Image 1: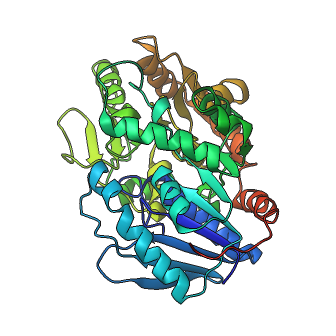
Image 2: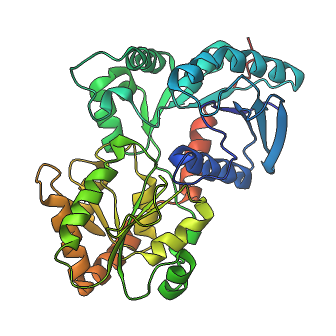
Length: 391
């Protein structure tokens, strides 16, 4: 097959995506690949295998997933994942030759995938960082982290060698361009979509029963993997402050990190949740708290808005600016110690405001469709016309 080659080394894009291990990149790739299939855009995907055998699957017509064994350790460390790239490259080259894959363009998802692409083929590369090391919280001056330095150098080099750099919003492109100028020069903005099932939630009483939450409680939701940059601890602290003075039963559901089912303080921890089950969580919640100060986009926020569930987001982020100007939630000042807890109180105490924000959120999310996303990707990919053999 010739056409579009997708390289996603760091995750297995056809594993069931959730809010924990799989994360937003799997959700994005699944939506994109399904959209390619519907539009008749052929794609081969190279991803790491979970075991020691090469496997090929076809989750959608015209899309093949080539699972490449590479000695990946479970659970991986950052260094072991980087060290397994040699095996991934060698295995990818063998499979590409065996199946006569000569791509005219390759998209690399995450920086390690880009490193692999440079060694697999000389076809033009479309790069999607998904996150940028230099933009992460705590990325300023301090004790040098050897792995962080390696990643920064590679991300800068990838931008200089890529034909295009895809960002999910103008805000993401502008902020990335401040730390990687080549990314700004080559940047193209293509927002992701949101699955239609998030626009058709089940009734709240059904969702509460499914999740195991009391029907008479007020419920806040945080959906994020166990990563300090997601600021989940800040949300838990803010919740505990307001719970002390809240008269009704109040629960904070933290999905995607695991932990005690109930910590005794009204916080319920859930492990990684299959993406197909996420509409139930949104339907069960009165509001969704998205406290991360750095996301390349923030799919949880988009899904919540599409679901008609009000959100609390920090100012200075993409969604902070959009929600602040177009509605759908509350954009709070992350520098104010009472900013997040104040946003929680406002959302909980005013049902009429929640109803208004719900309508606004549905409107804000309406332009974000996989049809629009994949149409933009198809136009970009069609500008690359010459097939290239593997190295």
